[in-house]
Structure formats: structure tokens, C-alpha cells
Image (cartoon, rainbow, N blue to C red; front, side):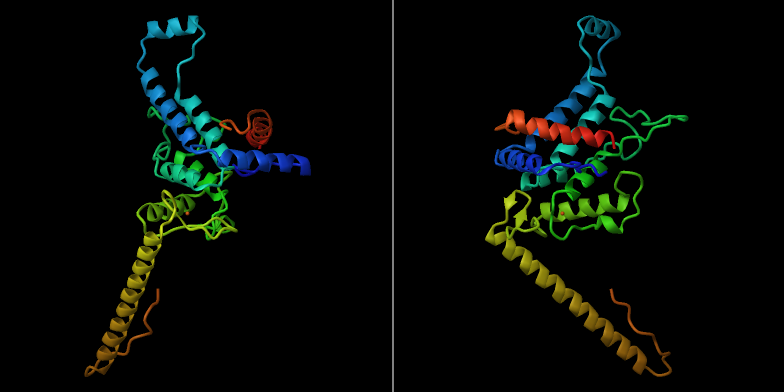
Length: 268
């Protein structure tokens, strides 16, 4: 089951789910909220790793648990699963940020410890960028840079080629080289929301310039080939090669159904 599959819902549950989703997406900051929580948690892990043994014993007496790298990984996974249900430009921006997050890509935890040890019988949590790629794949972006049906799946996670494709896609959006749309929508989005007319005109100018440049290179290549073939004693050459709460999801109803769906993911 994918990171964003919400399992089986009957018609009534689907209606409530959609209403809760729409209500959440209408709230400014619905995705940035999770980014802030993730980064605060990350900072806490680094800070709590520096506490002394005496402070740790005191915390344990008080029933307080320090933030640790394993809890951070679990929290990050949960946040990515939630963001995968939030198809909005704000969510795309947050996931784009984490596509460029190197945490975990070297097989190590946040504090630099190995994610697995010899003899472990469990699969390590994938990198932050990998989980972000799985989440953004689910948002319904038109003309995705990587088609999941074409990949060789490695367990439940994305392959490196998909992560790279989404990362390159987002970096082009962020630098103003391209826009994107959600399936069924005519709105073109840039890195900060709907693209302006000036942004679209600039992208179109750059596209035409690149096409003209490519065409010029092709013409130049053909001319050079003709000259080569016309030269005395020249050998014939083959053909030229061508070439992406209410602040808490309406509290009761939304939380119930989102938690129910997300919880089912953990068991698959």
C-alpha cells in the first residue's frame, strides 16, 4: 500500500473525508504547520542529545522523555502521510523543501548513527527526500516528472530515479523555469502560488529561446556533416543522433477519519 492510500471507505466516509480535506485546505498555513513542527522536532533532537546523564535521570523521574532520532523518524513519516492527502500549492512547496533534505540518504540517522546494524530484521526508514517524493506523487500533479508505473519498486519506497526526477522538477519550478497544474485544473502554479502573467510570459520566452537554440545546433550539425562528406577522400558518416485547523481538520470528524486512514497505513 502506498504512503497515501486511505484504504477502503464507504460512500458516507468518502463524503466526510472530502469535506474535512476541503476544510483543511482552505486554511492558510495547513502545510507550513507540519514543516514548522518537523523542524522544531529536529532542533529538539540535537538539543536533547547534549543533556547530561544527571539531567536525563531527572527527566525520567519527572516522566519526561527527551526527543530522540527514532521518534523524529516516526513523526516525520506521519507528517508525510498526512501531507500526501493535502493537494495544494502550499503542500507542494513544503514537500519541495524536503525533496532537497539530505537526512537519511547516507543510511544514517539524524545524529549520524547507522539506521541498521548487522542482524537487524527490519527495513530502515527511507530518507526524508524519499518520503517526500512518495507524498508529492499522490497530490495529483499533471504530467508528473516520473511515472510510478515505469519504476522498479524497491519494497514500499521510491527508487532513487524518482526522487531525483521530483527534485529536479521542483528546482525548476522554484527557479521560475516551469509551472505546474493539478489534474482537472487550469491554474498554473509557481513556487509561491498561482503564477503571474509575467512569470508565464518569461517561461514561454525561455522555452522558445531554448527551442531556437536547439534547432540552430541541429542545423549546424547537418551543415558540418555535409561539408565533411564533400571533402576530398572523406569517409561517409552515418546518420546524426537525435536527442513536479478549522486548524485541526474540523477537529472531531476530520481527525477521526484521517487518523483512521493513516493508522491503516502503518499496518501495511
